[in-house]
Image (cartoon, rainbow over all chains, first blue to last red):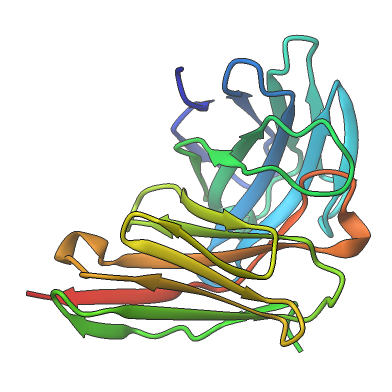
Length: 116
Length: 114
């Protein structure tokens, strides 16, 4: 099976702009989670989508949003970019459809966002 | 107290030795535990997951879980230089058990010396 794909791999934006990142999960996986990774804060959960619905949300401002399409592909959007948004944004795909135990998550290669 | 804590390292072991990586978590109700390996400049790669108390072995890797002590560890036997990476512990928190919110530790950097 093909792995998780993310586009674009690298992005350079300036403050105030907005950005959209895309993630295609492993075929058959219905859950997509997004994480932000920075040297100082490590890996932090942004949100999780399952069957086009946001099921969980982390502690990020409303400038961070996402959505999931009927084919399970997901996008995340960051509006009004700030310098501190520079990070590696990771998408993770999981077969999980059940409440309770969390199934294993498989990460994509990430999108490296630099905000100037 | 951090939700998931790991020693940042670096942990240095000689080739062929056993590397022991440790992780503690704050939520006694946590049910799912994962170990990821991350090479510099790459994304995390799943190594092991464990749900029940005790040991789980997969090749050179053994995950150990002790829910009473809120402790999970990863042992790497016969360590190889290619095992040099940052190892991330991830825990699913009880209050977020409907879905995929994982809380990650800061990671332990492992260096295996030839």
